[in-house]
Amino acid sequence: MKNLGIKISVYLNYFVFAILLNSVGIVIERSITVYKVTESQASVLEAFKDLPIAIVSFLVASFLPRFGYKKAMLAGLAVVFLGCLLMISGNSFYYTKILFLSIGVSFALIKLSVYSLIGILTETKKEHAAMMSSIEGFFMVGIASAYFLFPAFFNDKSDMDSWLNVYYVLCGIIAVSFIFLLFSKLDYEVEAIGTTLIEDIKQSGKLIVVPLVLVFIISAFLFVMIEQGIMSWLPTFNKKIFKFDSVLSTQMASILALSLALGRFIAGFLTKYIKWVYLVIICVVISGSILVYVLPQLIIDNAITTEITSITDVPYLGFILPLIGLFIAPIYPLLNSTVLSSLPKSLHSPMSGLIIIFSALGGTLGSRIVGELFQHIGGANAFYFLLIPMVLLIIFVIKIDKMSKHKVEILS
Image (tube, rainbow, N blue to C red; front, top):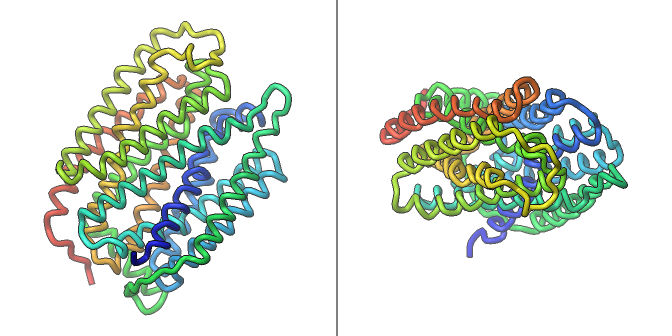
């Protein structure tokens, strides 16, 4: 099968970075517990992850077809390998910032390459949507793996530094991914949109004034604000509100990741039969309903005072809240696929850059706001904030659906 090797590489690289990128919630909890920082201080880790993603995406998105997607992914793996080694040797909150800086830079290269390659490896909008959903679903499987991999090294009672051993395992996975990609063959031909890097960036800048693109990037910003606001703070939420111990707090957060993975795989199937805009709106409404159902009960019933160490003692609300992932899961890949498949393939790399930039900014702002609210008004009240971007997202999704039905014209 043509490009089979590179398809496997795409999934493998995305899996590795799923673990690394979305370990931020786990590392936030570890930083508060081990390095004794506040919730507000720990919330900056999201910025150290997301801002480099935005900056690197802006600088290299248009140039990437010239440099080569395979070379970009190899470079990303090499940088994050070094970041993990520095985290092990540094063992401080300062080095968690360095780690997520390296993850952010690397992931920008990986995600730009992957999103651009989807357009090369598929022929139709339905194929594009299906592959986008399956890759994002596989990404969530990686995230779920992190919630079991990291706690396996927790030993707060006798060795607070034992959790760092997880990075030896991650270095091994990164090395395997690097070697596999190095020997994979990639056959493609994509025309660059300019003749120089400066011209590429100028042409890419014109995308942002296209109405469909402008409305989309606002939607992507809102969605990631919701997703990262929940995902980054759920382990800490579990520990502070439900009184789970460190291991159980992280493991219970895996339900969110597993729900996201399942939701995205299901979405890849449902989009063949249900119009994407209806699916997204239904999912947003159900997600908001879960928050409205769970949060008031946690605020009123604040009677949990003893630490919970066993899954058999977890209250039912502890299982219901992370199931929100099942319903927010389809939103992001469907939004991305709708816009990317409406543009010429030569514009997929710069468009992917815009997706990543505004997703990163949304994740940073969402996590930062929830972190500040968490510290000052409590976790249950902080999560109420997420209802605002949910309402706005529905409005913008309806606009995207209307605009995507017309031919997209790029200003010359």
